[in-house]
Each structure stands twice: as structure tokens, then as C-alpha cells.
Amino acid sequence: MEYVSRVPRPPLDGLIDDLYYLEGTPPYARLVLPPMPGALLIVNLGAPFRIGTGAFADGCVITTPTRAYEFGYPSPTRSAGAHVKPWGLAPFLPMPAVELVDRPLTVEQVWGRPAVAELRDRLAGANGPHEMLTLFEQELLRRLGEVSGLGLVRHTSGVIAATSGAVAIGDLRTAAGVSSTHLTQRFKELVGVTPKRLARTQRFAATMLAIDFTAPVDWGGVAAGAGYFDQAHFGHEFRAFTGLTPTRYAEVRQRFLREHPGHTLDNWPLPAD
Picture 1 (cartoon, rainbow, N blue to C red):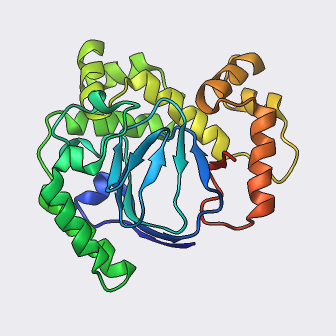
Picture 2: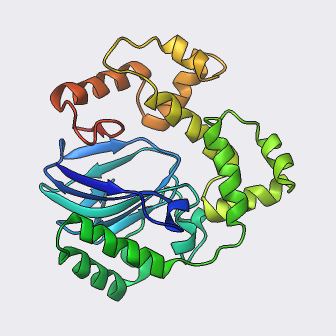
């Protein structure tokens, strides 16, 4: 698969981790994406893909998830997208982020059919991936709106990320100088989930991305190192996030690494076949 990505220019870099272009034959027809502490915006330029049982022709908008998603990819697939920071979709949404939690929408449902059709035409006609990402960036800059409370949520989310989710939520509220109710409300509006839920996802993702699956995994050591109460607690979290036990997850991850070594998608998605 061809994968091209870059960090957008300011002020989008404060909202988006990277813009990317993806084209080619996916490693598996169905991939499971465990939840990450971030959001996703995809503009589809090929045949429709599926998320769960739903078909998405023009793309999708996904706020910070609380569960894994199964993606069904056409072969070949072609899209432009953005890996978005937890709060990053808020300036582009006409509704509170909490309304989209675990409820992927098409881009058309968010921005309207004429606007999305025009954007897809412009992206499809771009002279290569780099020009496409520039056009995509320009569209996002044009749609950038003002959002109340963004600074508070951005700062607090940054602390959660810097501590890999190990910070006490009460400490966040105290440091921010706001009530727990106010902080929770802002997070739901702009991120979609509470600070506690984001911290939980952050801790799980940081733990998983630090594991070397090419070697035997000491799950007890992983759980202790990540600050989980005990291995049973870690196992419960694991199943809640992935639907798999740690041992089964390792088997599936190792299958991906064995069948597609060095693949651009090998660090997080799992084969669902």
C-alpha cells in the first residue's frame, strides 16, 4: 500500500496529528481497530468501505471511541484522511462531540452533500498525494471554527497524554481551577468522552504500543508497569477495549507481523478474518 503523511501547518497542527493519503490493497479485507485516544476523519475516494454493518461511500467522521471498530476495506482502497487529536474535531463539527460517540457518521452527514461532493472531486483530480494533502489542508483551514473551552480541554488532554493516563482526574480539575462538572461538560462537548474515560484509553493505548510482540510477552509485568491494580484488572480492560484476551491479542498481532512484515498498518489494526 502507498501511504503518505505529513503534519499540517498551524493552526491545524494543534488539532491534527497528521494528514495522510492511503491507496492500494489492504492486508486483510476486514481489520479491527482498537480504540485510540484520538479521532478520525476520512474522505473516501474509492469504493465504499464498511464500519461494522454500515456502508460509507464518501468517508467517515469518528470521535474518540470507547470500543473497537471493524473496518471492511474494498480492494483496492483509496482515501485521504486525518488522525485527529482528541479535541481536534470540535472546530469542524456542527454538533457536540458527545452526540457522535461510538456512532460514526458519513462526512456528508456532517458537512452536507454538495460540499463533500465538491471536495471529493477536487481531491480525486489532484496531481499526486502531496497536492491532494495540500487541498485537504486548505479545506480544513476554511472550515475551522471558534470553539469555547478549547484551550482548557487541550491543556488538560495534554497532561493526560504526558502521563500516559496515570494522572488523577481530581488533580486535573484543581490545576485547571474549574469544577469537575465544568471540566466533564467541556470534555463531552469537545472530545465526546469524560477526562476519566480519555485517561483510561490513553493508558491502554500507551501500554499496548510499548509492547514488543516479536518476543514473548510478560503480561504480569506489563500490567504492573502500566499501573494496573493487578493482572485481572488489566485483563478486564483488555477485553473491554479489544474483545480479546491478552494471549489471543498477541497471537493475532503476531500473525499480522508474520504475514505482512513492515506493513504501514502493522502497529495497531488487527486482522478480523
